[in-house]
Length: 432
Ligand code: 4AD
Ligand code: MG
Image 1 (cartoon, protein in one colour):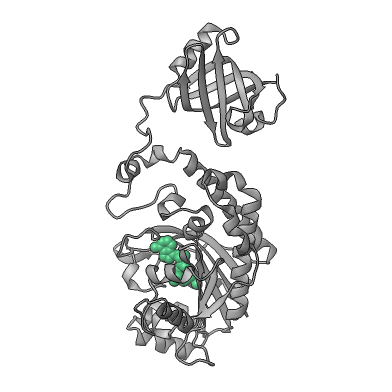
Image 2: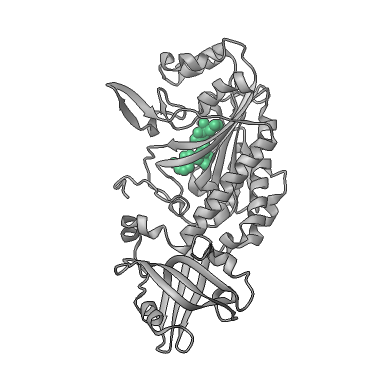
């Protein structure tokens, strides 16, 4: 039995070498004397040629029947040819059709709703495959980064008892007759774990029952979160910019093929490999928007449109800090230097993407935090365990959450967040 090679490895072989590959028929062309098949596997694509005089007749016949998306095993001889994709083709000596494909329902030019219904087939496309690879590499780099920084990876629950980011976007779950929720953020559990491990991080799903359907919201997304004891807002912002700059840099170095298939202008990412990133306060953000003719007032929340306009001012990610307390979550610490403002930061990605990270220093005083919970009209009982953390050896601490799909939207240059996750959940359909 021949040893199988990936389409990538075949491209490294010398002219005349024998090789066996397996994959799926990506393109197919019958020119009479010659049949061209482009086969794809997880590593890329490779041209196969069945030609009269070289390829046995029965193999040419099989090549004629190899429909788009059929799975095949192909044996042949390497030939360098500048016209072939990647400069190499395989002249067929043998071909096995392993699984014949019926008429494939995606031919190009279909509408989004149709394609989403057959997402399980659409995920094979070259662009989406490049995104799954980019995603994998980003996950690897995140893990590498936190390991280098001495952070412990932990596993918080997905089923929770109280809201982290407010009740409006909670998904309710019937937990043996009691109300529970799908987590919006692992933050509170990470806060509990810093009393044991000091510096922790996790990469897990978060759930948001978002009201509006936008190009940057998912109902289920992957959330990279970290929390550190003793860390103040400034140190946490430095960690965030280091993480983002490091990951972008490593992706540019190790995922150029994926970024090329995605059509990403990699040059535009270069400036983001360097830190520090620019910092503006919320107040400065409002003033920039006003100067640009946007109708906003101090105290307004910054929505997707405002964020997009702000990103025109920067070519790298940038921080917005010191939001009015009431615009932000109850757990954020008030800045003693600027009463009424939170020690909070958002990191916005350039090129129109907007917020990719939200973080803050946390309120660590029991009484202050309890009052905040009451002021917001939340039920203190629901937060008793969270308040306990302020009763037994409280410590200054800070943390953040990065939306992985938002990050990939930016790095991968995608217009819509659904292009960054294999099976996005939608309100009107949960399948496939
Ligand atoms: O700003 P958010 O709501 O902050 C938190 O959840 C904090 N508890 C995190 C923490 O401090 N540990 O969410 C963090 C990030 C956002 O900046 C955004 O990138 C992403 O999560 N995000 C979403 N991504 C996709 N779809 C949604 N519906 C999202 N909601 C938030
Ligand atoms: Mg936020």
